[in-house]
Length: 184
Image (cartoon, rainbow, N blue to C red; front, top):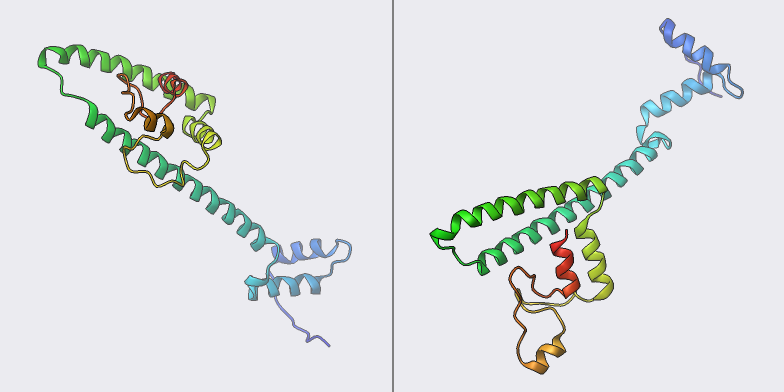
C-alpha cells in the first residue's frame, strides 16, 4: 500500500502533468513518483546522466589527444629551433640585407603553405608520423641520444662516417623525405 499525498501545483505544472498523463501507460501518480525519485536521487537517473557521462568521456579523450598533439608540436618546434641555432653561422653585415629579403620571401611562402594545409584539412605532422611508424615501427621505442643519426646504421658502420647533409637538409631523412619537407 502506497501512502497518499496531497500537493498544490501551479496551473502551468498541473496542465503539463495532465497532458503527460494522457499518454498511453502513464498516470499522474507514476509521473510524480518518477519525478520525485529523480529529484531526490539524482545518481539513479539512468537516462540523462549516462548520456552526459558518455559526452564528458568523449570530450576528455579529445582533450587528451589535443594535449598530446600540442606536446608533440612544442617538442618538435623546440628541437628544430635548437638544431637551427646550432648549425646556423652568423652572417657578415654585408650579407644581412639580402638574407632579410630572402627570409621575408621564405616566410611569406611558409605562411601561404600553412594556410593551404589548414584549408585542405591536411596535417603534415600526422602524415609524417604515420609514415615513419609504418616504415620504422620501433623508432619511437629506441633510446636515441639527441643528435645521433637515425638512418641506416649498417651504412654508417661500413663507411665509418656519416655523409654530411647538404645545406638546408634535415638530418636522418631520405631524399624523398627532404623533398617533402621542402614542399610542405
